[in-house]
Length: 50
Image (cartoon, rainbow, N blue to C red; front, side, top):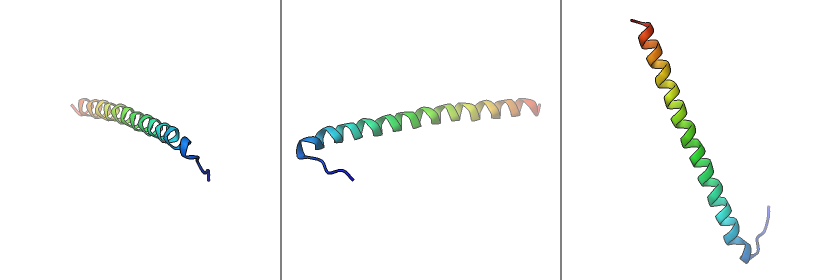
């Protein structure tokens, strides 16, 4: 555990906010790519059944 000085709190809070935004952005990007992959696989399987 780390105890912050009052003058350090804002800087750390901003860093945590940037980290969380980056994680959320990456998760959203990964979800889009996964959705595209699922759509391609489904389309391929649907065309194979014809």
